[in-house]
Length: 397
Image (cartoon, rainbow, N blue to C red; front, side):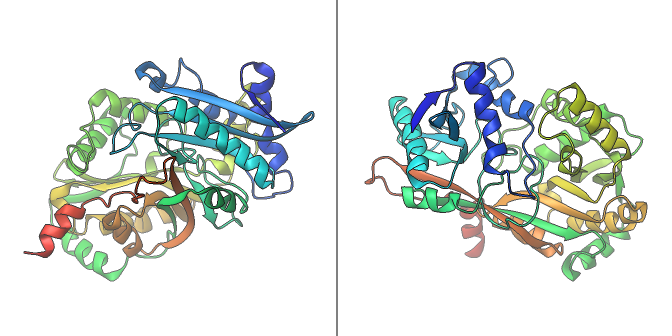
């Protein structure tokens, strides 16, 4: 077995092609879009390179056959954000061979040590957490959602036997759209329904510019300047909404308002893998044509909840339940969607987990973000719990 750095078109192609071999007998497998992966490693498209980010990729070969791949990276935004310098590894794929897997991980470890890192998270993305993040550990019998990692069950043993520890769990929830929210939310939502200033509506008919403004206001009032989140700028909000325009279904972009002030959102997109399953992971010109055809004419079943939030001053007053009730009253009768999958929430966010569980969801799948320190004397700590200090102070009052 030999490790080869990805340096040219041939090794790049072999890096991208390997999953087709690993999952050749898996009927649930839907490949990631090649162009999405290529963006991660493109210095012109991934802004982390401009702020000092570094990445290296390898394939593992046995004779003429590619049997593994991996990437290691230093994300300048996160590498030095904690007590210790921690890099990342991801895009890991390997045949069911422990020695091969350990060779790949060893290479990441060696490279990250050369960059001054003391630890490694994996499998993670060289970018945001909304794609290519975590190792699937539960539910291998359903197709993956767009952008979410999917892998053979045997990968878990590779990581844990190597010495990785569970840094945090990532929980993905499923919900039947016809089910009402639980009573605690319904009661509060019913009280709100009698407030003439309160309303919930979709973004049907709204211009993207206005949607971006609504999104910005709720995001900043829910997270900005809180729990380590920075305030978002209008340029960022516009960029996010613009990136969604091709796939956007305004009927499932839902906002709550106090008079005309946006106070909550429940933003969904169609489950893109219901369409991407037809393009075999390649959005070349033919893949784009097929995607657009199925996006327009294909049957839809699932919507993917990408973000759910309520302004801090309105939390706990039933806004969450009111938006879910709106889905039942407005979205379900359209007969386009029957269920929803909510993008993963970390176990370090217990407040959001309680909200989601109270909305009548069921746990759909679990992924894990692992961490390992290269010096075993460094004490391992799981991801800090959001709001832990505040909750502790509240409990003493």
